[in-house]
Length: 326
Image 1 (tube, rainbow, N blue to C red):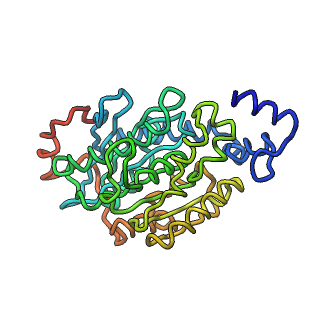
Image 2: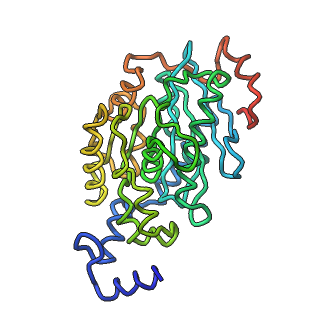
Image 3: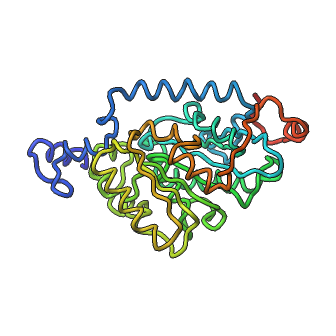
């Protein structure tokens, strides 16, 4: 029924949302419409992620739940003491990508002294959005419960997502009876990159052919309208080359966050939707410096090779959490 109605609106040119016809709305929620080649970016994500796993110590395929997709890769920090952890939730319109292509932000974060976890979750149409949000919550809960054995500071977990991942990260900030455990008060900070926070236009766009949201489901999964009174610090960023709807969603979320949290807003003028995550932990970029400052890693840290963990090698090797050590 939804697809038939959408095709009808597309044929007639009728307004679907905020005066936009179907073709315009679909283009607004297709960030690849702003870049020469999405394929080139996805290939680079995969190549850089392979290099990150090759060049750094990592435990791959750690199961944080019972679903086959509930897996994460954990990159321990080589810094002394208990470092902060950045948990990265990939994008892909809730229906593409995974941890295999999503380790590329890890190297600069590791060089700065952070540990990094890259989360995989189930994808549409096989997995619904409520379940995806629960999976990300479950990943955060699993990491916190295993913080001592993994070697990071449980009170310094920062949750980051890009695009659809930013939506899922924002959902994890919400308290209350949702799918998965309530981790909202255990997240030290959030980083939201080019996210979608009001899903009503998503429901009306081509993206919903996979998500299959009804009006209630879109509202239930719209963190913009559900934010609690208090939130941890948030870095909210977007690229300079985004569609107008992505810009509007970002601006609305920043406005809603400001009375509730310490917000650092970043507009990376030279970035687009897909290049923005490259700057996630990169010193000397506005986004990278903001993220590292939020994680209390703003000072210059001597880059460390992940193959030489010194005295930490033995405890890491004794972790019995499944997965594979590379």
